[in-house]
Structures are given as structure tokens and as C-alpha cells.
Length: 291
Image (cartoon, rainbow, N blue to C red; front, top):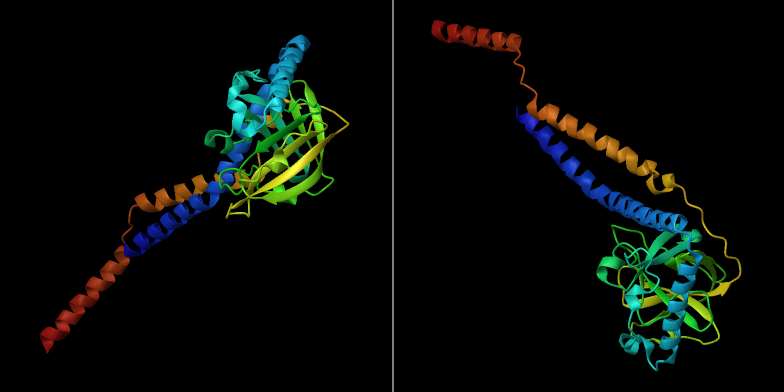
């Protein structure tokens, strides 16, 4: 019985340890599927509602907002003076304005209005006070995401991008390509690197650095280049399964079953050993009595 208890405790600790070990992978996988589904739903909405005039109108609204932003002396501080931010490019009423694709680090994430913790915990946030990404000169968009989260990859590998690498944004029915032309590390209070240039179309990807310390900000800036090939999505992409995740998930029920079997398995008594033990006791008793 004592041996069974020790075995049970060992299996229990192993089971708990395995769950702790698998949490980052499972959580990251889940958030990845949520992001993929959001993008697929976004594309499905556009495909089922091919209203070019509506999209053009939404781009015009974003263009007007960007122009008002450009006219402000300090856009990052004074942006509250412009109304309607959350309604611009918000086609599905979820706050999603499009999605970002970075093939080099295998990242594809939805872009939402604002940089609240709710947004940054699972996706990319558009920094309010910076331009909407509409592929025109006189704009500078800043997109922010966390790195190093155990629950999601996000911008964890952003530091692997180099000058000349490419990424792209899909906004409504258009895709805009950008080539990395500048990488800088600044303090949180340094804002010069994200100012709007009236003659350029920039996207800056922003995250914290150094990894795990987060005292500074890593800025990866891209300049728009030609080539606007749009992605094509199929329904199965949102539900593809990662083998590295499936294997542990299959193993967990097996381990749990083993744990329950040992826990509730009836103890079998070895009657032969009991008989021999009793016989020895009787013989020992007789010896003592003879003496």
C-alpha cells in the first residue's frame, strides 16, 4: 500500500509538471488559432461583401483623419481633438482594421484600434496619434505588440528582422508591402523616430527591448514598396493542427487514465505468502513452547 502511495504521488507531480511545461505551447497555439480565425473571418466578410464603393469611402475617411493628424503640432498628444478614431476602417465592428504579415518570422496577426492590454495580449495594436495605414505619402503608422509572453508569440522574434526584409499589411481589399529601411532602439520618451514625414509612407513596428527587461523600445521601420499581391484564404487554414501540440494532448489522457487505474485498483492479497508467514509463526511458537 505504501508503495502505491509513493507511485501515486510521483505520477501526480509528473502530471502537474507536464501541465506547467505545456502551458506556454498550448496557450500560444490557442491564441494563434484565434488570430488565424479572426483573419479568416475578416477575409470572408470582404469576399462576401465586395462593395468597392464602400471600401473606397472608408479609405477616404482614413485619408481625411490622416490629414487632420498631419496638421497637428503634436499628433501623439493632441489626437483626442479629432473625432471618430474607432469608427475608421472598422468594417466588422470588432475594431479590427486589417492584419500584418511578416513571413521571415512566421507571424500573421490581426491589427486592432488602440494599444490596450486586451489588444496587446493577443494581437497587434495601432498606436493612436499615428496615421492609419492606407498606402499614401504623408503617413507614418506605428503598430505595437508584446514580446516574450508565455501565452503568445506576437513580436517575440521582431529583433530577427534586418534591413531589406519585407512585411505587408492587408487593409480592407488592399495589400501594402514595406521594406525595412531602419532599425533603432530608443527610450520610451523618445518620439522623433515615429514622427510623420509628409513625403514618405512609413510603417514602424514597435516592441519592448531588451528581451525580458523591457526598459527600451525596438523600432523596425519599413518604407512602402511596389507589389501588392493579396493573400488567398481557405477555411482549413484557420483550423490546421500542429503535431507538436497534438502529441502531448494525446499523452495527457493516457497519463490521467494510468493515474486513475493505480488510484482505484483493488489491492490483491497474496494468500500463499500469508499462509507461509502464519505457518512460520506457528512453528516458531512451538519452538518457544518446547524450550
